[in-house]
Amino acid sequence: MFNKSEVFKLFDEFVYDPNIDGRHIDYDLTKHNWSEWFLESARELKPSLTRLEDIHLHFSVSELLSLRQQFERLTRSREFSQRIDSFFQEYITPLLGRDDYLLQSTCGIRVVVPDQVKLGRLLHFHNGYWTGYNNLTGTVWTPLTEAYDTNTMQMVDFDETRKLMNKIYEEQLEFDQIQELCYEKCFPINLKPGQSWLFNQANLHGNVNNETGYTRVSFDCRWALPESNFGIRRPGSYYRLQGVHHEMDSSKIKKGNWITFIDQNSDFVGLTPHYMLKEFMFQYMQTRKLDIDITEFHNSMWYMGEWAPRLRDYVSIKDLTGIVMPSIYAFACDTDLRLELWHEAVKNNTQLLFCDENILVSEEKDIELIEKLYSIEKKNNG
Ligand SMILES: [Fe+2]
Image 1: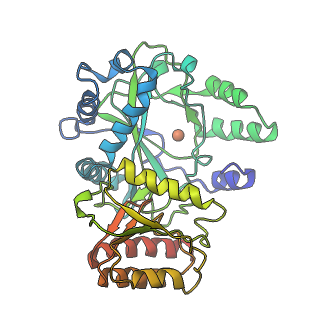
Image 2: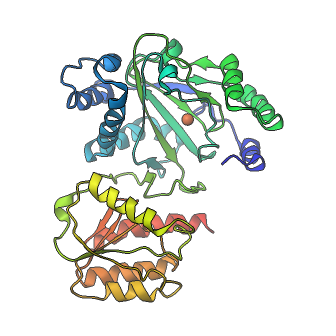
Image 3: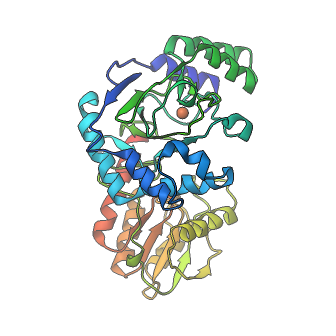
């Protein structure tokens, strides 16, 4: 969000917590050897790579995107998600004094190669509120290489951030001016593997030109309290419940007669053109290598509303193998009716695939996760 009153409302509500705002933690590197995991993963693409600091010597700029995708796949895996859960339980839960938070489903990955500015790869200074986070969200930033000087993340402290934000909004500063002002006020987060930096969403932070000659790699994983106002970063999609991972077991998908379905009357879909969501669903199935034969695109997405006559009809058809849908939230009908429809589908042996949350429903127990996510949404919407 960029709206001034919304951003400053979050600033006003911000309460500094020395446990989690702007501090580092030391963790057991033998138990959580993140650097080794990422190196192994990168070596699947470039076996000659021996250390992450040398990524720029082994990957061309155009290959960095596939490296990032490879890393993202790693962070979504069952094993990695379990390791993240245990890392957070060990180091973050005691600081928060509670363990009912959600975690980011796919960690953010940063590969900061030397002289990234001239390659157009600079991550400019920004504020967490601008990028859709709020005060009930925290970031754990973990470097996988030694992070120092110009290759590391730069932060602006809270008081300076507040002053700069006033100036940015009052004078409607240009993008480059924001970068320059932050550059004057920032300090580097110097850390080694075995350390993570915890910070809130208020502080301005970003990168400067990496003049160290080494590539910095880091990953960031956010927690969000369940009472958080999630906005576009929805539970089940951007955030996952602890104990849940976003790796899809494609062997569970049944062969047969599948259709796609989009409820064009839902708030989720809104004014998004139908074809865009269809493309998104196809892309999702392709990248996850899900072997699903879509036999029909149905154009009858308009027969949806409080009582969902179209979808009710589909889930009651006995010879339909499955339905691919954009999201568990993409319906005009309420969550009670949605759950009733999912139970009906299971009764009729129809699988349901929700792309944005990466959820495949084949049996009753699969609906439990959706139920939990709906209950978080319900609480947030009062
Ligand atoms: Fe950020």
